Image 1 (cartoon, helix red, strand yellow):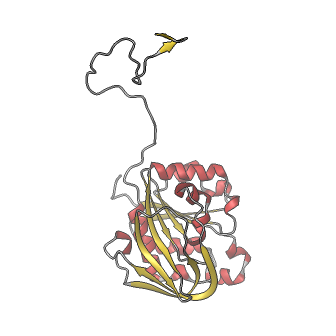
Image 2 (cartoon, rainbow, N blue to C red):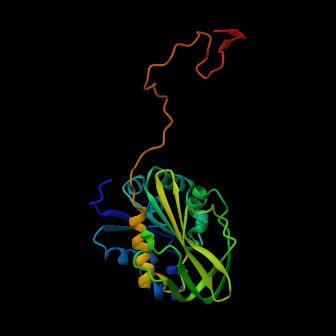
Image 3 (cartoon, rainbow, N blue to C red):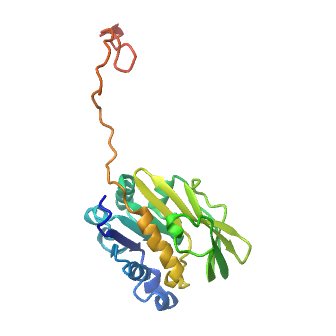
Length: 264
């Protein structure tokens, strides 16, 4: 991939809470996707567009998905409304190389569960608790410029057990005022693509206005950007070297080939 080309980021958002609840709209008047996108636009190496649930094909047409380097996903109350066709389209593109960043309650998104192969269930509590998001891998590209921990004064608690495959890399662990802990920054590789799950982001708190959270997301976009885009196929290929001669009755899979019980 051309590293000098700006990274094409699509920020996807259900965009339902901001239309329904005045308290959420007051925090994110244009939607969480715009707050996230405005922060990313400050980086010269990124271009940003938006897609929402109620757009045609949820804004994730073949053209959009095919030209996206990194997709950021926020969902909560309408996971079931995402069409299976769009889910498989996104999953296929991740396997081919597109980066995927899943935020907060996106842990229950169809595409995230499809890529994880687990229920992605967890425990939760909404009590405006303080959270310390501990940076346990300060040398990781996603934590570049991030302090020892990010402290959020009011958050929704997500707690273990989080039913996910063991992350390839675990870079943030959260501690909550009520005593729970959670694997809040998890990295995986699936096919040719990279996936990052980042826990903070409940809609009733101004999480995406936080400068360090914005820094994590920008770092994650750079980490998740594609290295290659390759379709997964299973072709029948010719040998590279001359094969040794085999008996005529010796099958191509090492088993004698027969027709009606008789050797070919």
